[in-house]
Image (cartoon, rainbow, N blue to C red; front, top):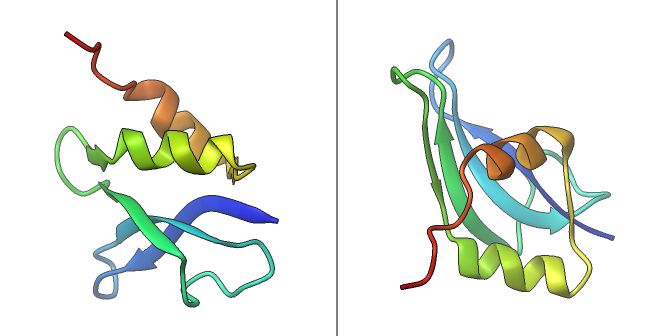
Length: 82
């Protein structure tokens, strides 16, 4: 199964996360299929950058969100098409 979940990068005590598409059985920072965003909890407010088109694609082919990524995506919806 394919998951969209966080992979921690950054120095000790300075977390920075990539939102990546990865097989569920792989290690947290294992080889991912694609990076679809970033999350930096150290800024005020926390900064989130998402590639909404790619997330929609992966969801359409059966990828599932981790609980944390589901909250981030719900909090930062795609901008309305003009």
